[in-house]
Length: 394
Image (cartoon, rainbow, N blue to C red; front, side, top):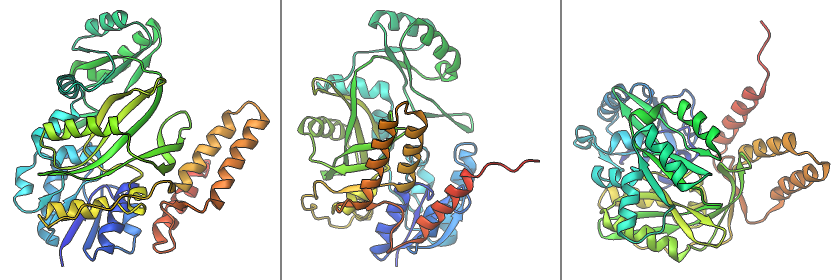
């Protein structure tokens, strides 16, 4: 029986991968740099291993993975975050001893570098926000004043390798000159990578999810976010499967086909108030609400495993529309934030009622806490309660 090493096992997406591959009869090993990750509690994980933190010790992380592959006889490695995908996409030494479920290095670099992505999008006539690529602080200031406030300051990469350390970046919205000055003082990455200065697009986020093989698309999926954490915009805590927007799917097809992409991808857009989708970014990893796609009969992890092993693949049947997925503790966090910040009692009551109604929703499933595999949910609740306790006085 083949063994699969699933990285980033504390992520919700990794838990979905572990459950999927375990149900398929594979021996799954959960791996993370943290102790007691969620995925390790699943009945589908035969054991768990721990590796060095890939953010602070990327070289040690890769070295330990090579050791884990040898000690456990790993056939396939599946990363679940941007960080581990980035580090493994170009690891030729690792790919000699195990199959690594990542896109090819050149296509990965082209689509995840936002500056290169926008240049490709322009050549393919894909709509994107008006953008200036700036490489100095002075150029950022000039671009912002040229576009007019508000502007978005977006690093070309979400994470990048500097020496033997991975540095993280963040996106800033500058609504005026003071915001711009404050942002420039706090963003140290500006000395290392280009900055995309973009015209702000009012609207909401949306996207499509895909699995691409050497011959083209294998599976597609889309959802809409109903509630997020934080409520103003963040990770999805309640979402619903929806039909794929044909304009977004067309743009995704152009990008993935043009680069010879193989693997999973999430292509994100900003939908303007007039309904126009503008390309934002591409991520070469599984998404947080992966379990919803699996519940809707598109088993992306299993399809990715089959593709990685060069097994014959059948096109999935059309997926279920209107099914919902709820990350209970994330939804609870979102509720608490809204209660604390709401200024009117009526708004608080409406928020609490909407939260309570989700328990009686017949088409909504819980993401982590499942009767068929309860221990990850129990572990998450235990860790959540522990984190909520006030620190003991010394």
